[in-house]
Length: 218
Image 1 (cartoon, one colour):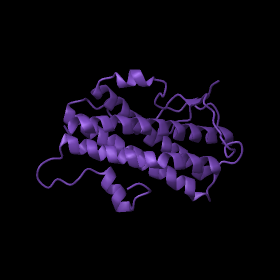
Image 2 (tube, one colour; image 1 turned 120 degrees about the vertical axis):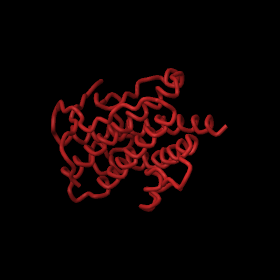
Image 3 (cartoon, helix red, strand yellow; image 1 turned 45 degrees about the horizontal axis):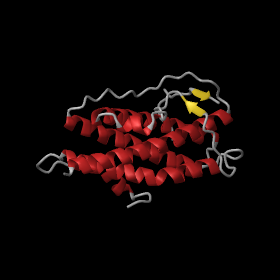
């Protein structure tokens, strides 16, 4: 389960819808084949919304499975470290009222960038798990699934942005690397934060895309 290097290790310690069959997953991730008229904006938004819903159904199970396989203290009941953060991840600090007050184009741009970033961070988490527990394919496989879906959603969102005339920034394939430490514990913490924040942004994407879906189906 190896991919090219160029990952982030910038950990900061501060105070439908079960898994679809392969072809069903590809249907969610890939744009439909052109058989005449191009896909409408409403159809593109609906496709992205369905994928985000699928991702939302998986994130809770992903975090639970991840924690169960890390050992103590991660596997203990109610494990949570709210003050743990990773500077390279998309921010989760913006209050809902402020987020909801942004223009659709700005929220699309932030969401698209967020899931492209998560596709890179989830790859890092999968590589770390494969390195630390080479015989534990359950967590690794689920992380790669999540990474594929995050990348697919970022692509779907970019397509919606193009249709709406919203500029799409170039994808950043390589994250900066400023390691705080490389211990097993820190790498497990890093994976926990990645999945936790990925879950937050997935919930946000479902709500936002649901709003867009209602708006453009009118």
